[in-house]
Every structure is written in C-alpha cells, then in structure tokens.
Length: 255
Image (tube, rainbow, N blue to C red; front, side, top):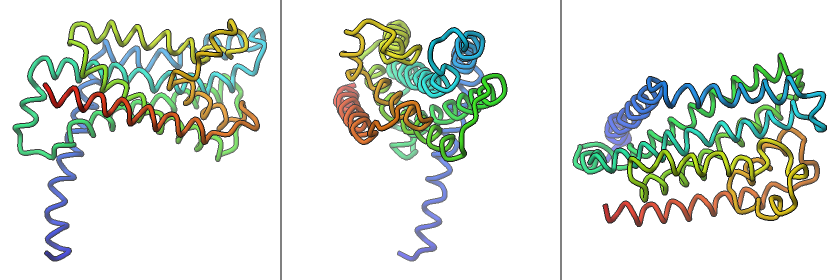
C-alpha cells in the first residue's frame, strides 16, 4: 500500500470525525437550556465573587477564582453535554443506530470530547478577558498557556465521569444525577473558596474528587499553589480516567 493510498483512505475518516464534532457542538450550542448556563455561570460567578467581593474575600480571589472557575466551567460540558446526552442517546436507541452506520466507531465519543474541549476553550477565553479587564489580573504568557492546558487536560477525566454517568443512568434521571455531582463536587473541591475556609473534614475528603486534583493543577499554573508538585495530581486524574472509561465500556458493551 502506497503513501498516497493511505492518505486517500484517511481523508474520509478524518472528515467523519470533523463533521461529527461540528454537529455535536452545534447541537448543544443551539440548546439554550445547556448553552446558556454552561457559558454564563462561570463568568457570572467570577464577576460576582472575584471582582465585586475581591477586597473582602480574604485571599487573592481574582487570580484564585480565575483558575478554579475554569475547572468549574469544564465540568458542565463534561457532565451535561457528554454524560446526559449519552444517557439520552442510549435510551432512544441512537447508540445502536450509530453502530450500524458506516462511520468510524470512535467518531461518536470523539465528537463529544471535542465538543467539551470547544466549550472549555470558550469559557477560558471569557474568563480570561474578564480577569484581565475587570479583575486586574496580570499573568505571564506561559501562565495563561499552562492554565489553558490544564483546562483542556481536565476534559479527559471529567468526560470519563460523564461517560460512566451516561452508561448507567436513564435519560430522565441523568440530569438530576449530574446536578447532584456537579455543584456538591465543585464546592467540596475548593472551587468556590479555599478549603482552608471550610470545615477540616472537607479538606480531608477533597482528594476523592477529580475536580480537586484538576483545581490544584490550575492553581499551580497561576502561582497559587507554590511548591506543590503537580505530578501526583496528573497521575490521579489519569487513574480516574481509566477507571471510569473501563466501567462505562463494560456497561455499554451490555447495552
């Protein structure tokens, strides 16, 4: 097989992936019940808590919350855009139809992962503009790039959690379960305020949540976790990813 033959065969496959990702993104962007909360809540909360209450926050809220609300922004497309839609598609028989179509088997999940990354990118850009203007945040270019890389990396474990949710929950129950995970896990991970301002037991159980590990990586990127190694957090998130993907794959194989 020549290189030209390989390239010709590869083009339609890549086009399938690109079209699936585009359609999945537009599908959710055109759903106000998903797009508006996902895109507006992190910037709205940042303006409220990091800008308006910065002087009374007792910590460097404008920088700290830039990092943690970026993580908060990643969680919504992962749990709702990925997890809930998988549950609905599974319940409606859409997954079975996708398997029968002449398309790459990984395009369905890859499109949802790309969708989550696109939403994470938009949220990061909005938060960055607000932080640089209203929040008076001044960070070097490498810190911005590191923070963006942390948000994109966080899509993997959180989408894995969303995939597992979509594989076990019904379409009707999935939004309620996602909400039960979304807000409590955000609060218990220190995304709303430093864990030192919360009861001691909250800090002891924080390593159980993938959002806490991602938050520590994001905080290290902006200099809010000096001297803290990020390698254990990266390893923990990779472990979360593999575990939840394995659980979801086992469940979906029975569907």
